[in-house]
Length: 77
Image 1 (cartoon, rainbow, N blue to C red):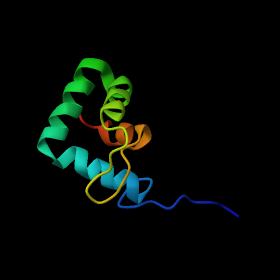
Image 2: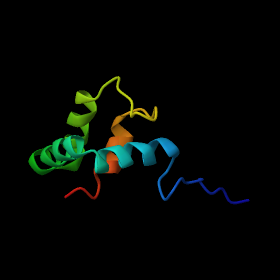
Image 3: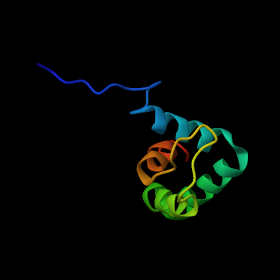
Image 4: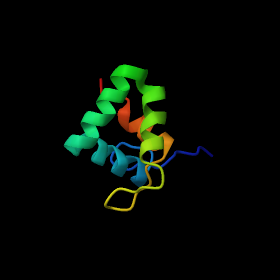
């Protein structure tokens, strides 16, 4: 029996998709994420953004966690 992970709109989960949607479509959040990625690289930039957004959620209720942020920032540069 093979196990296939379900995806949501091409992302690993609804939460990952929603965080990506917000980071890539909210202008101020995008600019901040882009600046961090450019200065620190995706990995460290995502960690820095996760610290900045600690305890916060998107307006839709998805948690800004390091994994979702890193996945959202993959194509930002």
